Amino acid sequence: MSEILVLVEQVDGEVKKVTLELLTLARSLGTPSAVWAGPGFTADAKARLAEYGAEKVYVAGSADVVDYVVAPKAELLAQLVGSAAPSAVLVAATAEGKEVAGRLAVKTDSGVITDAVGVGDGLVADQSIFGGGVNVHSRVTKGTPIIAVRPNSTAPSPAPAAGAEEEVSVALSDAAKASKIVDRVKQEKGARPELTEAAIVVSGGRGVGSAENFSVIENLADVLGAAVGASRAATDAGWYPHQFQVGQTGKTVSPQLYIAAGISGAIQHRAGMQTAKTIIAINKDPEAPIFELADFGVVGDLHQVVPQLADEVSKRK
Ligand code: FAD
Image (cartoon, rainbow, N blue to C red; front, top):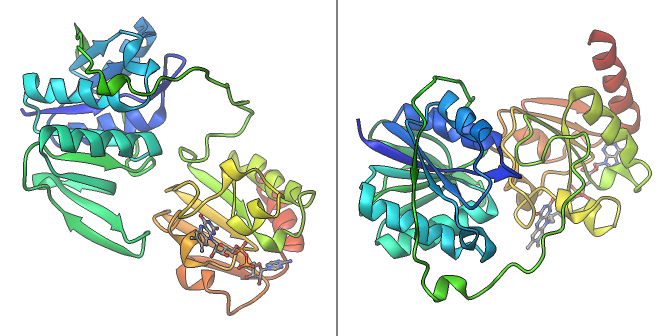
Protein backbone atom coordinates (compact mmCIF):
# COMPACT_ATOMS: atom_id res chain seq x y z
CA MET A 1 0.00 0.00 0.00
CA SER A 2 1.13 3.55 -0.60
CA GLU A 3 2.92 5.39 2.17
CA ILE A 4 1.25 8.34 3.89
CA LEU A 5 3.53 10.62 5.92
CA VAL A 6 2.12 12.08 9.13
CA LEU A 7 4.01 14.91 10.84
CA VAL A 8 3.91 14.25 14.59
CA GLU A 9 2.80 17.00 16.97
CA GLN A 10 4.18 16.50 20.45
CA VAL A 11 4.77 18.37 23.69
CA ASP A 12 7.72 17.29 25.85
CA GLY A 13 7.80 13.93 24.10
CA GLU A 14 4.08 13.32 24.58
CA VAL A 15 2.30 12.65 21.29
CA LYS A 16 -0.69 14.97 20.86
CA LYS A 17 -4.14 13.58 20.19
CA VAL A 18 -4.32 15.19 16.75
CA THR A 19 -1.44 12.96 15.61
CA LEU A 20 -3.39 9.87 16.66
CA GLU A 21 -6.31 11.21 14.64
CA LEU A 22 -4.08 11.74 11.59
CA LEU A 23 -2.64 8.22 11.89
CA THR A 24 -6.17 6.83 12.07
CA LEU A 25 -7.12 8.81 8.98
CA ALA A 26 -3.89 7.82 7.19
CA ARG A 27 -4.73 4.12 7.70
CA SER A 28 -7.83 4.59 5.58
CA LEU A 29 -5.72 6.10 2.79
CA GLY A 30 -2.60 3.91 2.77
CA THR A 31 0.22 2.85 5.08
CA PRO A 32 1.01 5.49 7.72
CA SER A 33 4.58 6.54 8.52
CA ALA A 34 5.07 9.04 11.31
CA VAL A 35 7.69 11.80 11.08
CA TRP A 36 9.25 12.87 14.38
CA ALA A 37 11.00 16.23 14.32
CA GLY A 38 13.61 17.01 16.99
CA PRO A 39 15.04 15.35 20.09
CA GLY A 40 13.01 13.56 22.76
CA PHE A 41 11.84 10.49 20.85
CA THR A 42 11.20 7.95 23.59
CA ALA A 43 10.14 4.32 23.73
CA ASP A 44 6.74 5.54 24.99
CA ALA A 45 6.29 7.83 22.00
CA LYS A 46 7.32 5.05 19.65
CA ALA A 47 4.82 2.67 21.28
CA ARG A 48 2.06 5.26 21.05
CA LEU A 49 2.65 5.91 17.34
CA ALA A 50 2.84 2.18 16.60
CA GLU A 51 -0.36 1.60 18.60
CA TYR A 52 -2.25 3.92 16.24
CA GLY A 53 -0.89 2.37 13.07
CA ALA A 54 2.51 3.86 12.24
CA GLU A 55 4.34 1.12 10.33
CA LYS A 56 7.46 3.27 10.37
CA VAL A 57 8.68 6.30 12.31
CA TYR A 58 11.20 8.59 10.63
CA VAL A 59 13.15 10.25 13.44
CA ALA A 60 15.07 13.44 12.75
CA GLY A 61 16.51 13.84 16.24
CA SER A 62 18.70 16.89 15.66
CA ALA A 63 17.85 19.88 17.85
CA ASP A 64 18.26 22.11 14.78
CA VAL A 65 14.97 20.79 13.41
CA VAL A 66 13.05 22.44 16.24
CA ASP A 67 15.40 25.25 17.27
CA TYR A 68 14.62 27.31 14.19
CA VAL A 69 11.15 28.60 13.35
CA VAL A 70 9.02 26.24 11.22
CA ALA A 71 11.22 26.12 8.06
CA PRO A 72 13.33 23.08 9.13
CA LYS A 73 10.24 20.92 9.48
CA ALA A 74 9.28 21.78 5.90
CA GLU A 75 12.82 20.91 4.74
CA LEU A 76 12.71 17.61 6.63
CA LEU A 77 9.40 16.68 5.02
CA ALA A 78 10.61 17.82 1.58
CA GLN A 79 13.62 15.52 1.94
CA LEU A 80 11.35 12.60 2.88
CA VAL A 81 8.98 13.35 0.01
CA GLY A 82 12.02 13.06 -2.27
CA SER A 83 13.39 9.84 -0.76
CA ALA A 84 10.23 7.96 0.23
CA ALA A 85 7.89 9.23 -2.53
CA PRO A 86 4.78 9.02 -0.30
CA SER A 87 1.36 9.31 -1.85
CA ALA A 88 0.39 12.11 0.57
CA VAL A 89 1.58 14.12 3.56
CA LEU A 90 -0.81 14.86 6.42
CA VAL A 91 -0.20 17.60 8.97
CA ALA A 92 -2.44 19.07 11.67
CA ALA A 93 -4.23 22.24 10.58
CA THR A 94 -2.73 24.21 13.45
CA ALA A 95 -1.04 27.58 12.90
CA GLU A 96 2.34 25.86 12.64
CA GLY A 97 1.06 22.87 10.68
CA LYS A 98 -0.48 25.11 8.04
CA GLU A 99 2.75 27.06 7.69
CA VAL A 100 4.74 23.84 7.32
CA ALA A 101 2.22 22.68 4.70
CA GLY A 102 2.53 25.88 2.68
CA ARG A 103 6.33 25.86 2.74
CA LEU A 104 6.43 22.16 1.85
CA ALA A 105 4.12 22.75 -1.09
CA VAL A 106 6.48 25.40 -2.47
CA LYS A 107 9.54 23.22 -1.95
CA THR A 108 8.03 20.15 -3.62
CA ASP A 109 6.05 22.04 -6.27
CA SER A 110 2.91 20.34 -4.99
CA GLY A 111 -0.65 21.30 -4.27
CA VAL A 112 -1.82 21.91 -0.73
CA ILE A 113 -5.21 21.72 0.95
CA THR A 114 -5.69 23.35 4.35
CA ASP A 115 -8.52 23.11 6.88
CA ALA A 116 -9.66 19.70 5.68
CA VAL A 117 -12.25 18.12 7.93
CA GLY A 118 -12.04 14.74 6.22
CA VAL A 119 -10.15 12.94 3.46
CA GLY A 120 -11.70 10.11 1.43
CA ASP A 121 -11.10 7.89 -1.59
CA GLY A 122 -8.78 9.37 -4.19
CA LEU A 123 -7.44 11.74 -1.52
CA VAL A 124 -10.47 13.97 -1.99
CA ALA A 125 -10.61 16.32 0.98
CA ASP A 126 -13.68 17.81 2.55
CA GLN A 127 -12.45 21.36 3.02
CA SER A 128 -13.80 24.35 4.88
CA ILE A 129 -13.02 27.55 2.94
CA PHE A 130 -13.76 31.30 2.91
CA GLY A 131 -13.48 31.55 6.67
CA GLY A 132 -15.70 28.53 7.10
CA GLY A 133 -18.51 29.96 4.96
CA VAL A 134 -18.39 27.19 2.35
CA ASN A 135 -17.46 23.49 2.34
CA VAL A 136 -15.96 22.05 -0.86
CA HIS A 137 -14.47 18.76 -1.99
CA SER A 138 -10.93 19.30 -3.20
CA ARG A 139 -8.17 17.13 -4.64
CA VAL A 140 -4.55 18.02 -5.26
CA THR A 141 -3.72 17.60 -8.93
CA LYS A 142 -0.02 18.37 -8.90
CA GLY A 143 2.90 16.79 -7.05
CA THR A 144 2.51 15.07 -3.68
CA PRO A 145 -0.80 15.99 -2.02
CA ILE A 146 -0.19 17.91 1.20
CA ILE A 147 -3.24 18.07 3.40
CA ALA A 148 -3.65 19.98 6.67
CA VAL A 149 -6.46 18.37 8.66
CA ARG A 150 -8.30 20.07 11.50
CA PRO A 151 -8.02 18.55 14.97
CA ASN A 152 -11.10 16.55 16.03
CA SER A 153 -12.01 15.65 12.44
CA THR A 154 -11.37 11.92 12.92
CA ALA A 155 -12.05 9.81 16.01
CA PRO A 156 -8.71 8.22 16.90
CA SER A 157 -8.78 4.43 17.06
CA PRO A 158 -5.84 2.11 17.70
CA ALA A 159 -4.65 -0.54 15.21
CA PRO A 160 -1.20 -1.77 16.22
CA ALA A 161 1.57 -1.68 13.63
CA ALA A 162 5.33 -2.26 13.55
CA GLY A 163 6.52 1.28 14.38
CA ALA A 164 9.95 0.50 12.89
CA GLU A 165 12.36 3.35 13.63
CA GLU A 166 14.43 4.92 10.88
CA GLU A 167 16.88 7.70 11.65
CA VAL A 168 16.95 10.64 9.30
CA SER A 169 19.61 13.31 9.11
CA VAL A 170 18.59 16.50 7.42
CA ALA A 171 21.04 19.05 6.04
CA LEU A 172 19.28 22.33 6.68
CA SER A 173 19.74 25.23 4.29
CA ASP A 174 20.93 28.60 5.60
CA ALA A 175 17.48 29.97 4.76
CA ALA A 176 15.87 27.46 7.13
CA LYS A 177 18.08 28.82 9.91
CA ALA A 178 17.04 32.42 9.34
CA SER A 179 15.06 32.74 12.59
CA LYS A 180 16.05 30.96 15.75
CA ILE A 181 13.87 30.30 18.77
CA VAL A 182 15.72 31.90 21.68
CA ASP A 183 13.35 31.04 24.50
CA ARG A 184 10.33 28.92 25.18
CA VAL A 185 7.82 29.99 27.79
CA LYS A 186 5.86 27.08 29.15
CA GLN A 187 2.15 27.70 29.30
CA GLU A 188 0.39 26.70 32.47
CA LYS A 189 -1.29 23.51 31.40
CA GLY A 190 -4.13 23.66 33.92
CA ALA A 191 -6.74 20.99 34.25
CA ARG A 192 -8.65 21.87 31.08
CA PRO A 193 -7.96 20.35 27.67
CA GLU A 194 -6.16 22.38 25.02
CA LEU A 195 -8.68 24.56 23.15
CA THR A 196 -7.98 23.33 19.60
CA GLU A 197 -7.92 19.69 20.68
CA ALA A 198 -10.86 19.62 23.10
CA ALA A 199 -13.84 17.42 22.29
CA ILE A 200 -16.12 19.97 23.99
CA VAL A 201 -15.69 23.76 24.02
CA VAL A 202 -17.80 26.19 26.06
CA SER A 203 -17.38 29.77 24.85
CA GLY A 204 -18.59 33.04 26.27
CA GLY A 205 -19.14 36.34 24.52
CA ARG A 206 -20.12 39.90 25.31
CA GLY A 207 -23.30 38.59 26.91
CA VAL A 208 -21.20 37.21 29.79
CA GLY A 209 -20.86 40.82 30.92
CA SER A 210 -17.57 40.86 32.87
CA ALA A 211 -14.34 39.02 33.61
CA GLU A 212 -15.75 37.78 36.93
CA ASN A 213 -18.82 36.37 35.22
CA PHE A 214 -16.60 34.11 33.11
CA SER A 215 -16.56 31.79 36.14
CA VAL A 216 -20.06 30.74 34.99
CA ILE A 217 -18.59 29.61 31.66
CA GLU A 218 -15.63 27.95 33.38
CA ASN A 219 -17.89 26.03 35.78
CA LEU A 220 -19.88 24.54 32.94
CA ALA A 221 -16.65 23.72 31.08
CA ASP A 222 -15.28 21.95 34.14
CA VAL A 223 -18.30 19.74 34.72
CA LEU A 224 -18.19 18.77 31.03
CA GLY A 225 -14.40 18.29 30.94
CA ALA A 226 -14.36 20.99 28.26
CA ALA A 227 -12.05 23.80 27.16
CA VAL A 228 -13.10 27.43 27.54
CA GLY A 229 -13.27 29.74 24.52
CA ALA A 230 -14.28 33.36 24.06
CA SER A 231 -15.48 35.70 21.35
CA ARG A 232 -13.34 38.64 20.34
CA ALA A 233 -15.72 41.02 22.07
CA ALA A 234 -14.92 39.22 25.34
CA THR A 235 -11.15 39.06 24.77
CA ASP A 236 -10.96 42.68 23.56
CA ALA A 237 -12.80 43.75 26.69
CA GLY A 238 -10.08 42.03 28.73
CA TRP A 239 -12.54 39.57 30.25
CA TYR A 240 -10.68 36.51 29.02
CA PRO A 241 -7.13 36.05 27.66
CA HIS A 242 -6.63 36.45 23.90
CA GLN A 243 -5.15 32.99 23.56
CA PHE A 244 -8.68 31.61 24.09
CA GLN A 245 -10.29 33.66 21.32
CA VAL A 246 -12.18 31.57 18.78
CA GLY A 247 -12.62 32.87 15.25
CA GLN A 248 -11.02 34.29 12.17
CA THR A 249 -8.31 36.09 14.12
CA GLY A 250 -8.28 33.57 16.94
CA LYS A 251 -8.18 29.78 17.13
CA THR A 252 -10.08 27.41 14.89
CA VAL A 253 -11.85 24.65 16.77
CA SER A 254 -13.74 21.65 15.48
CA PRO A 255 -15.02 19.90 18.62
CA GLN A 256 -17.78 17.31 18.94
CA LEU A 257 -19.78 19.88 20.91
CA TYR A 258 -19.52 23.69 20.92
CA ILE A 259 -21.60 25.69 23.38
CA ALA A 260 -21.83 29.42 22.58
CA ALA A 261 -23.18 31.51 25.44
CA GLY A 262 -23.90 35.21 24.93
CA ILE A 263 -22.33 35.16 21.46
CA SER A 264 -24.22 36.72 18.55
CA GLY A 265 -22.65 34.56 15.81
CA ALA A 266 -20.76 37.12 13.72
CA ILE A 267 -19.16 35.71 10.57
CA GLN A 268 -15.67 36.16 12.05
CA HIS A 269 -16.64 34.06 15.08
CA ARG A 270 -18.32 31.40 12.95
CA ALA A 271 -15.11 31.06 10.92
CA GLY A 272 -13.48 29.50 13.96
CA MET A 273 -16.20 27.10 15.12
CA GLN A 274 -18.73 26.20 12.47
CA THR A 275 -17.23 22.82 11.67
CA ALA A 276 -18.10 21.72 15.22
CA LYS A 277 -20.22 18.56 15.02
CA THR A 278 -22.97 19.86 17.31
CA ILE A 279 -23.55 23.50 18.24
CA ILE A 280 -25.66 24.70 21.16
CA ALA A 281 -26.43 28.42 21.43
CA ILE A 282 -27.63 30.19 24.55
CA ASN A 283 -28.73 33.74 23.85
CA LYS A 284 -31.43 36.02 25.19
CA ASP A 285 -32.18 37.40 21.71
CA PRO A 286 -34.24 34.92 19.67
CA GLU A 287 -33.14 36.74 16.47
CA ALA A 288 -29.40 36.30 17.18
CA PRO A 289 -27.68 34.93 14.02
CA ILE A 290 -26.01 32.16 16.03
CA PHE A 291 -29.38 30.36 16.07
CA GLU A 292 -29.17 29.93 12.26
CA LEU A 293 -26.11 27.80 12.81
CA ALA A 294 -27.04 26.05 16.05
CA ASP A 295 -28.32 22.49 16.24
CA PHE A 296 -29.96 23.31 19.58
CA GLY A 297 -30.81 26.71 20.94
CA VAL A 298 -31.91 28.07 24.29
CA VAL A 299 -33.45 31.54 24.33
CA GLY A 300 -32.70 32.87 27.77
CA ASP A 301 -30.35 34.69 30.09
CA LEU A 302 -27.08 32.78 30.21
CA HIS A 303 -26.63 33.70 33.86
CA GLN A 304 -29.65 31.53 34.61
CA VAL A 305 -29.36 28.90 31.90
CA VAL A 306 -25.64 28.07 32.16
CA PRO A 307 -25.54 27.41 35.95
CA GLN A 308 -28.69 25.27 35.68
CA LEU A 309 -27.12 23.30 32.86
CA ALA A 310 -23.93 22.81 34.90
CA ASP A 311 -26.01 21.58 37.88
CA GLU A 312 -27.93 19.12 35.72
CA VAL A 313 -24.75 17.75 34.16
CA SER A 314 -23.13 17.31 37.60
CA LYS A 315 -26.20 15.47 38.92
CA ARG A 316 -26.09 13.01 36.04
CA LYS A 317 -22.39 12.25 36.35
P1 FAD B 1 -22.02 40.69 20.36
O1 FAD B 1 -22.06 40.65 18.87
O2 FAD B 1 -22.16 42.00 21.04
O3 FAD B 1 -23.10 39.68 20.89
C1 FAD B 1 -23.41 39.49 22.22
C2 FAD B 1 -24.60 38.55 22.29
O4 FAD B 1 -24.88 38.24 23.63
C3 FAD B 1 -25.88 39.16 21.69
O5 FAD B 1 -26.39 38.26 20.71
C4 FAD B 1 -26.81 39.28 22.88
O6 FAD B 1 -28.18 39.01 22.54
C5 FAD B 1 -26.27 38.21 23.80
N1 FAD B 1 -26.51 38.46 25.22
C6 FAD B 1 -26.32 39.60 25.91
N2 FAD B 1 -26.58 39.41 27.21
C7 FAD B 1 -26.96 38.11 27.36
C8 FAD B 1 -27.36 37.31 28.43
N3 FAD B 1 -27.39 37.78 29.70
N4 FAD B 1 -27.69 36.00 28.20
C9 FAD B 1 -27.66 35.49 26.96
N5 FAD B 1 -27.28 36.21 25.88
C10 FAD B 1 -26.93 37.51 26.07
N6 FAD B 1 -14.90 37.88 16.60
C11 FAD B 1 -14.63 36.70 17.16
O7 FAD B 1 -15.37 36.19 18.00
N7 FAD B 1 -13.48 36.04 16.81
C12 FAD B 1 -12.60 36.50 15.89
O8 FAD B 1 -11.58 35.87 15.63
C13 FAD B 1 -12.90 37.76 15.28
N8 FAD B 1 -12.09 38.27 14.33
C14 FAD B 1 -12.44 39.43 13.73
C15 FAD B 1 -11.66 39.93 12.67
C16 FAD B 1 -12.00 41.09 12.04
C17 FAD B 1 -11.14 41.60 10.92
C18 FAD B 1 -13.15 41.81 12.44
C19 FAD B 1 -13.55 43.07 11.74
C20 FAD B 1 -13.92 41.34 13.46
C21 FAD B 1 -13.59 40.15 14.13
N9 FAD B 1 -14.36 39.65 15.18
C22 FAD B 1 -14.06 38.43 15.69
C23 FAD B 1 -15.45 40.45 15.79
C24 FAD B 1 -16.83 40.05 15.32
O9 FAD B 1 -17.16 40.79 14.16
C25 FAD B 1 -17.86 40.37 16.41
O10 FAD B 1 -17.78 41.73 16.76
C26 FAD B 1 -17.69 39.53 17.67
O11 FAD B 1 -17.61 38.16 17.35
C27 FAD B 1 -18.87 39.78 18.59
O12 FAD B 1 -18.69 39.08 19.78
P2 FAD B 1 -19.97 38.65 20.63
O13 FAD B 1 -20.83 37.76 19.82
O14 FAD B 1 -19.46 38.16 21.93
O15 FAD B 1 -20.65 40.06 20.94
